[in-house]
Each structure stands twice: as structure tokens, then as C-alpha cells.
Image (cartoon, rainbow, N blue to C red):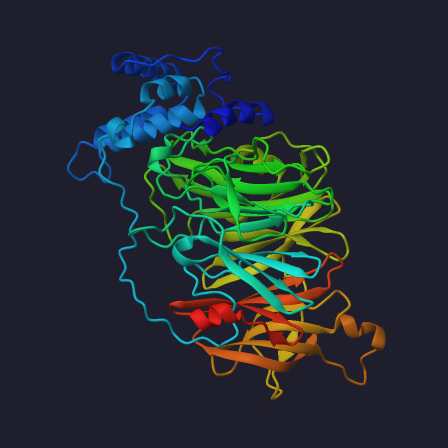
Length: 578
């Protein structure tokens, strides 16, 4: 384990109120000397016996280890020894110095007799790329569909994305002089190298601090086996990929980056926000599925993150300890000082069995981080104690009980409503449907099942006057604008990107025009047969949209486009290479 990880152990305990039923966690006052094998296993057994009295998870994991010796076992007994070590290591800090002393200087294969890791995709790779419209600014992108992560600083848009072999790339575009800089490779990702499958968990995010230095975080999905056990989780680093943080060598300069060693390499998922005072908050999961969620704070003027704060903590089911209850969170900056966080309940398990029809994702939860003092509050303004477990989430932050309604929640996200009410969205799935809905908190309680903002009675007709039945996105180009960027499916089944105008008629009053829900396509930019479109507005602090980032995907082709001032701004360097 590297020194940065060891330092985070003490920091996490002091930064979070971590309540674990089996014990009160304390760090040893003195370093532990190298352990002999017999001493290590003796101390390990003592700790397991000690905590097994109150924690049935050990019995469940030990039972799986014994079953691992049978011919039909999915995982062998050595695999389960590794899982037991990780559970003990993450749940009970007392074990950490004992384990670290025993494994110091040892490679993974010297600790566990397990076969080489297999993270291959088992799918045939092809160089065939279907033709996409010209005007893109990226090379062909791997992984799932997304629009990158961007920042608008003055007249310059900075965009980072997951490029070749999932490495992070960054480019900038000056809106005033219509000029691209880059793309540049900002770092090296351990995801998807060699025969590994393409993985999108560690997509890069970008923040430009108040001093002009550019920060990119990328590449994580559980860490690598050689990173050792994860001190912030009960789940092993079995997915692959280290999370990294790099900073530009000079302000506003994309040509050179240096790597920092201030975040856990085991992290998965990336999202960040810069607050009005210049502080940057980075949200991530501390490891693979059965891991807590954290945030890191970088104070204005610093180039490194402080030790993490634990937001949620996974809890094995007491009656079935192989099942682990955890969260998926989604943060959104809602004011100069507040970040709203929605989450769902995810029922995972140590056997790594995932039902892909619903992924055991349920409910909607809501809370707010007040960055002025680091406090968390629910919708009722009640202060929350961290970390949140499923039990405390159900008690204090539940906004919608999809389990009770017989639905699953595939995703959640906070919303900002014009009337100032608290709201959140959830993707509901049931028999024959899957759709986004809204929950609203008003007069002390939550109501759910509301249509998403701006969608009630909304209509869109194309240039021929035909009504559009499937609208993927409609983004107004400013709060007081009568123009919007739209992505939709036309009558031929093609995915279309266009600009639309709000429609008027003789009965429409001028003061109600901007609230009209009737739209008509004004100009079509491209139609993509059997393709998929995503759009993301690039807005300034007043909400005026200065550009639109569009993702166009068709089979094995995926590119990003930048629409600005009525045109797609191609990066000629990328166009020439491709």
C-alpha cells in the first residue's frame, strides 16, 4: 500500500462519523513490525473470532470459502480468503496494520494463489466505423455514450473526454476567435489496456481553479490488485483501473500535466463542482459496488484534495449477509454554497451476481450538502449524521419508495425548479415502461409521479409541420430565449439534431410567449439513421447558452461536436487525422 493510502485512513476516521455496530474503531499508536506468517494468521483468526460474535458476515463468507473447495463452485476458497481479508480490513481498522506488516513488499500472487485477472470483453474487436457527419472535434470515442465534461471560462470552453484506450484527452475552443487548441493526452489510464474490455466508470472530469490551473480526474474502477486492499471499503479491487488526479503545469495551458497522489486509486465514478468561493468538490465511490461514497474538497488556492469525507456506508443484510445494501449517488450544484445529492438503494452481493433486468436498484433519496460548514440536511432541514446507511437513509432522506410501488429506479438526479421548490428526478421502470418522473417536496412532504420539468403538454413539429412523437432533449438557449437545441426521432426513425423556435398564434399573448410549450423546428443540422444523440448546453453564469456539445453515436462510431453561433466547429487537426 502506498503512503498516501495509509495517510487517508486516519483522515477518513476524523472527517466522518463512521458508526459500525461491531466495534469502536481506533488506530494503533505505534507502527507494527513485520509479521511472520504464523503470527499473522493467529492474529487474523483472533480478530475474526472476536467480531464474528456480533457480525454474521464472517460466517457467511467463511461458508462460501468452504464451498469453494467443491467442484461446482464459481470461486475457489483462495478467492474467498481474499474477500474475507478485505471485509475485515475495511470494516475493522484494527486489522489494517497487522495485514500491512505481513504483506509489506509482497506481490499479489505471493499473498493469494489466484489465477491471473481476467477482465477481457470476450467480444470481437472491429476496426469498422460507420460514417458519421463531418464537423466533429474528437477522434472516435470508446465506451458508453456521453458528452464529456466541460468548463466555460470567459470565452473559452475546456472539454475533457475518454479517448483512445480510455486515456483522458483535453481540448479547448475559444468562442470569440473560433479557434481550437488540442486535443492533448492529459494522462495514462490503466482501464481497458491490453485485452481488457472498454470501461467507462473512470471518465475524466475537468475543473479550472481560480488560479487558472486545470484539474482532470480520471481512470478509476476499483483499482488494481497490486494496489493491495482498500482501506476505505469492504469490497475488493476486482474491476480494474486506478483513479488519478492530474494538474496542468501552467495556468490555462493544456500541453503538460503532472500527477498528484491525493485521492484513492480504488475510486469509481467522477463528478465535481466548483463553488462560488473557488473550493472544488469531487464526488466518487470509494471502490467497487459494495463501497461507500465519498467527497474530496480542494480549497481555493490549493492544488491538492483534502482527505475524503464518507457520505454513505454499505451494510450487509443481517438475515442474509451475502447481500450488501449500498447506494448510488448523484450530486448537483444548486446554489453558490449548496450541492444537492440524490441517491438510490442498490442491493448487491459478495457473489457478484447481478440481475441485469433491474440491477436491484430501488427508491429515491434526497439531501443537501451545505459547503459553508460541511453539514448535510434532508428536505425538512434536519441535520444528518454521516455516514448514511440504508437504515438511516430510509428514516431521514427517502423521497420515493419505488419498492413499495413495485417499481425499480434505474437512476436519480437532483432538479432545480424555477419556483424554488425542492425536486428530484427518478427513472422508473415497471411492466412495459421505463421513464423519467419528478418528485416534489412541498408543505413538508414528498409527492411523486409528476412529469419532468418543461415536458407537460409540450409539442414539437418538424419543418414539414409533422408532430414529433419522440423528443430526446430540448435545451433552451437561455432562460429568456425563445430558441432551443433539440434532439428527436423523426418519422423515418432517424435521430435528428436541430434548432427550434417557440410557436406563436393570434391567441398567444406576448408576455406568455417565453412560457409556451409549443415548438417548431427552425433548422435541421443532421439526421442519423440508427444512431443516438445526446446534447449538453455550455452555459455561462447567467444561464445564457453559448454553445452545445452533441454526442453522435452509431454502432462502432462515436464523436463529439461543438455547435456555436449556428455552426458545428470542427477541429481541423482531428478531421485531417481521421
